[in-house]
Image 1 (tube, rainbow over the protein chains, first blue to last red):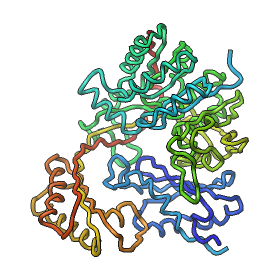
Image 2 (image 1 turned 90 degrees about the horizontal axis):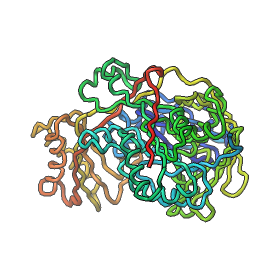
Image 3 (image 1 turned 30 degrees about the vertical axis):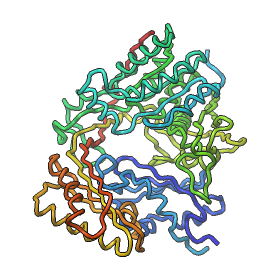
Image 4 (image 1 turned 180 degrees about the vertical axis):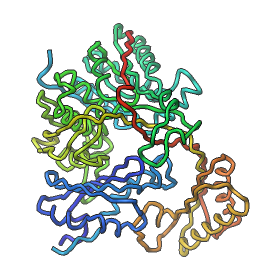
Amino acid sequence: MAEILRDIAHVRTGDKGDISQIAIFALRDADYPRLLAAVTPERVAAHLPGLMPRAIRRYELPALGAVNLVLEGALQGGVTRSLSLDAHGKTLGAQLLDLSLLPE
Amino acid sequence: MTRSTLRIGAGAGFSGDRIEPALDLIEHGDLDYLAFECLAERTIGLAQAARAADPQAGFDPLLEARMRRALPLAAPRGVRIVTNMGAANTLGAARKVTEIARELGLSGYRTAAVTGDDVLDLVLAGDYPLIDRPGTSRDLGGAIVSANAYLGAQGIVMALEQGADTVITGRVCDPALFLGPLAHELGWSFDDHAMMGQGTVIGHLLECAGQVCGGYFADPGVKDVPDLARLGFPYADVARDGGAVLGKLAGSGGRIDTATVKEQLLYEILDPAAYLQADVSADFRHVRIEQTGPDRVRVSGGMGRAAPDKLKVSIAYHDGYVGEGQISYAGPGAAARGRLAIEIIRERLKIIGAQVEELRCDLIGMDAVDRRGAGGEPAEVRVRIAARASCANSAHAIGAEVEALYTNGPMGGGGVTRSVRQVLAVASTLIARELVQPRVHLEIA
């Protein structure tokens, strides 16, 4: 029984300046609707209360079974300025993997 | 005479990348081209600072080591090399490669430097709005170290037309290292937005080298990747219509499948409908990814529209110092002792009057990188104090205060480390493309 995002999806995290970018991919095409329901900007923000981005944009890519999240202002000024141990925010995508799924 | 297909490989995905997979590709991959992507956002500023200290320096510090091993394999096989290892001294890098070619007896070896990306004089003379924060370039004032425009693939094509065996660039859009050879060999026009878009997709998939082959992918039990210690680097077989099949050497580690390719396709992409490059605004929304065999994936359907009028420029500037100190605690109450240590440091920095602009206090193992607010008492914690300061003395005080926790702080602290680094930060702006023209300089061994 799929309960968390990790059960149905895989993620890749990147960065551009002060923007964190997290792409999330359905492991199976059939799970794409559940993925879309789970990773709304509101649910992502609530799951990462310590992040506090200025804005979260979401791009849907049905041909790839993917969602691209763009989290603006999420990296404390960006990799070249941030005092964070993980200045690139590379660990952020993995932290989404225990996001709960909505009931089917 | 243009070819029907071209095989182009990736030899590095960042400046410190492994060298063996690149050499294996040259020797056994039947390549036409190999591209080394080695220039991160901040690297060129660091290189400019190195060149200020030594006029012969300023190109990638690993250029010589890489080329000494790559050239003896690449030259006899006719594998042409494209790389952005020129960093802040592209001409110096081309001279160094030519010197190596002579030592190796490769008489007549042609190395081209593509210049034109250095726009420092233009930026210093003008006032350019920053695109990633409020303010303008003038606000950065005398702290600016370098300013480089992201060139497209045209300079690389010009160099290849002049018969270059190796092409060295400074700042170019990373996919352009691949798009240049593709356009040159397959006869693609820069006005053909669809081909520029598909070529950008191919370059983007290859530019991080091992990442499309299962690097940065493994999650044991969920996404397993075989033999990462021997991860193979990728190549693409690209047809004139832009259709590409990704592959890697038989026997190398890693995996190429639809999952690894999808992850890499969207890596560091913001709007997938408009991936802005110097040569095209690429559209990744309709890319098709199909498994055609073991570790073989076909990629097609990249699209594009006309490139933006302006080119992106990265400005590197001095931004003070960061001082850091760390200390570990373990056993029952470790987290509480870590929190006490942080309280002590905060108070100490006030008492000694350290001039600190920004302070960050982490408990590694609890909240240093985790943004979920996940709780739980860990078996050990590591206190990390980091602060930004405009002067080096205040930055040094951070580590000194953490070290003093040995005899003045909570019970059982161990393993102090401390450091100070000068910060070279990067801001971005835009510049009219007609102000930036690539030029080619050829050196012959």
